[in-house]
Amino acid sequence: MTFISKSLVSVAAIAALGGTLSACAPLILGGAAIGAMVTFDRRTSGAQLEDEGIELRAGSRLRDALGDRAHVNITSYNRQVLLTGEAPNERDKQLAEQVVSRVENVKGIVNEVAVMGNTPLAQRSSDTFVTGKVKASLVDAKDLYVGAFKVVTERGTVYLMGRVTQHEADRATQIARTISGVQRVVRIFEIISDEDLRRMSLTAAPAPAPAPAAAPASAAKP
Image 1: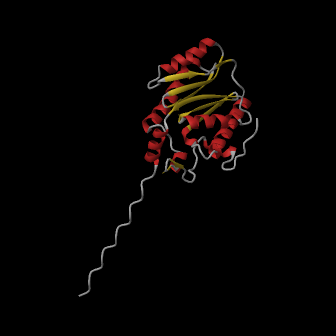
Image 2 (image 1 turned 90 degrees about the vertical axis):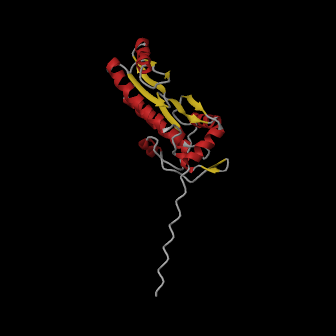
């Protein structure tokens, strides 16, 4: 696979930030300036809080149920949960899904846990590096907004999550497939319409600054 150059953001910086990126110059979609959409999370604030809660509660319950015999990662996006990692047998893989399915606010589960031994640290470090490269390439793509995507990598398989248009889904998939180290791309998207995206852009656009108040007229001298 060919390597895409990262002209805007270094891979190391992307991996360290974990998806927290500064906004770029405004872009235009349907006549609306949407530079804020670069980092704008398309989930509601309530959904973001619920996703954080799902990951915390699910992680705690999985530790109680499986202990150290499995390595399961939990990623929740808009209440859709992705399970990745490794379990020693099919029973534990299914147990992980059952435990997470009982967590409050979970509306769906994609169980990608592999039945195998836990991966070594070197593999996990490689996966983190691949995630950084994918995110950097999404930043370089002028027609995409990296804040709309959640990227997870496990054993060379890249999982793409997010609320995106069909064009964005196809474009991000195409980009991810060209990255060195990516073995497979799995899409777990919630597809929205262009009109939905335009409405989000208007919501995300910063309100204009109020005009400065006029200075009071000085009193006339007698």
